[in-house]
Image (cartoon, rainbow, N blue to C red; front, side):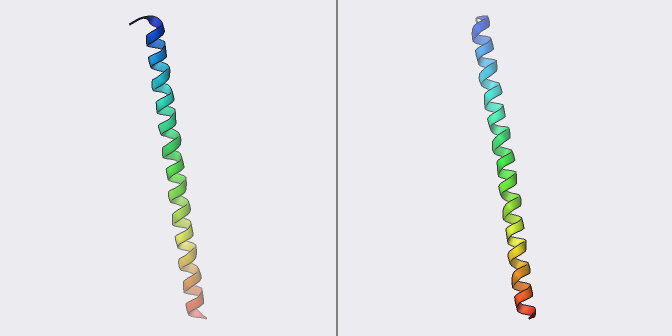
Length: 51
C-alpha cells in the first residue's frame, strides 16, 4: 500500500469509530429519557390513584 492509501484507510477508520461513539451516546440518552418518562408516568398514576 502507498502512504496515501494508508492515511486514507486510517482516516476512514477514525470516522467510522467516531460515528459509532456518537450513535452509542445518542442511544444512551434516548434510553435514559425513556426511563425518566416511564417513572414520571408511574408517579402520576400513583398520585392519581391515592387521591
